Length: 253
Image 1 (cartoon, one colour):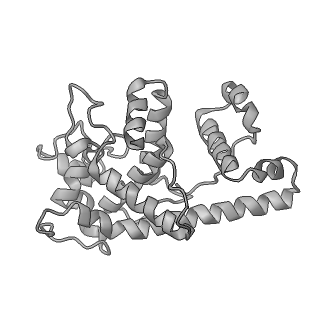
Image 2 (cartoon, one colour):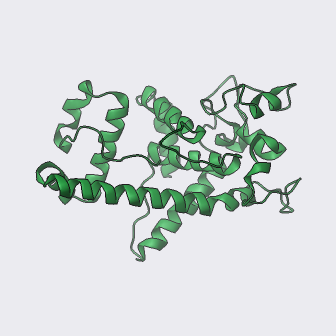
């Protein structure tokens, strides 16, 4: 997501566990993101703790520009790919969709709408489509069908197939392979699968399916932002749940 990556209190890696009780969930997520970044680039921590303020500001700005550029690249590359991946075997959605024209996507289209529909609603139910189109019903704070295996949600077992859809995996692999290619080295390691990276890719897939034209704005709370934050809150709430750990283990296979 397009947000300052280093904005939580800067805490040395060894002291993160000691600080958890005094950080809010949002601050904790950002602190952990900082620690992941520090592991990727060990000199960063010392530079952030002892470096001149101007150097720190410059570094944060450069990192943020990189995050913004990566987001923009992922948005552009997934826009048409996701529509290809959800197309039937004959390769044609009905009516046809083009990634360059988002106005016909989302809840305006039967295929993308059924995938984006919150699982507690019946897409074919009377008035559901109109309520979603008018935003009378919140769709960004609930699980959509596309995150479940085979796009099937089981009310009796809400965890069944959660975050195990082929669409999510295909999108993740596509972005991962692109990152390895950009690295320009045959021995470049593929990005590690984390809960945050799953939330990231799910948010991008949701945006690619939707009719939304703004992914993130500093002035308006977008649906992409709400959806991403909702996923992170869910992960934080269930961080010790064995079912969540099983999902992460499934992705790591």
